[in-house]
Length: 254
Image (cartoon, rainbow, N blue to C red; front, side):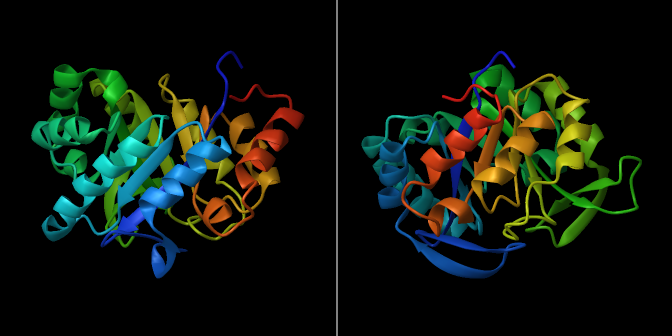
């Protein structure tokens, strides 16, 4: 693989705190987002992703404030998602210090928003977040969900990733809603299916519980691996251990 693998901690933010649950339920507090971001920056994370898991208008100001304070503390790329509805939101996030914006529900409602953001800011700024679940409702067997995996859309996840990349998404963040928070390993079949459909970088998310879980996701086609629980509730050296496991499997890592 020509490009070095990226290891990305994900901070799910709710009302100004980092939270984590299983399948987006049973959320528990994992700490202050700015402090965690700083810790991960120092521990060797390649990027950081912030996702506002409630994404209500009432929390929007909090998120911008957190982004600005985090950008002052870390020196690695910062992606922010949750409640990103269009060009204006992306513009404001970038001004607050984010490097990339992740879009999900708004793109499902109006796919043209992908084109608009990519044309305004460039593909490198836009990450399409794909929250997918295994169902029997679509040709690929993977279906797009919204609202933390609770609402099915009838949209085929593989085809949606393909369309998103065609419209201008610079990366695909592929979240397995079945595996999320279970710490039982990534959904490698889902990763493989989406990898075959898109040429843009693919970030695998959902299910990581130990360093040995990461190399199979890369073997399936992930260019980057994203996790939360394994970093938030694991040892301080978890990022180093994950990178060691990736190297030991024969992949170049940053």
